[in-house]
Picture (cartoon, rainbow, N blue to C red):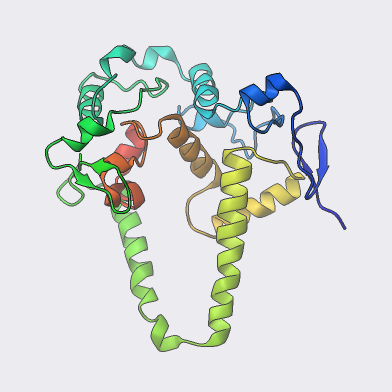
Length: 274
């Protein structure tokens, strides 16, 4: 039986068919075009937080510029009175560290303001800048990962993640081939179906639609990966795309390898602040 994927409210595609735009106008604005339903996915009853507000659905048929799209969504959902904008020209031509220091010394954050990308050459000359492993990015640590203030959420995350890795050390002493196959199976269900297909492609990017029962089943597979609830994961990822590589990016590589891959998960103060 063929699996039908609905890329939009009135378009039914049977895999592996691909919808391509033949219009010159559409090809100029987007490499591949598909309409996305305005109905939000897994939406809660209240979305007051600015980062979660980007989950609000809207027609996005011919706009494939993610930054423009997300900025418009955040602008509509975030009260302008909560923060004051900083002129864009203040941030142009600055290194990441200079943008960071300017932004966080200017008062309340305006999380709907899209900042220009930092100057990588100036960032390379910043004191303490170190090249990120297998990258051309030079990172500077902005918050001490150990000596900073830790709250209950940080200790909870660190305890859970640390304990999970300690238990994994027992794997060589409990090895069996059935357990290897069980690992591969659960990895596929939670990581491939849950995180990659559901959380990332369907919920965060709205790349396709499925019947609600299948959408929720795939999302539950993502919950099994213990990476947070669907709304938090998808909204954080959209917020990351809106502010990629700027000081508002939740896990910018310009703050080093440790921060961008793991450290940001253990700093709840920064996650809430942005």
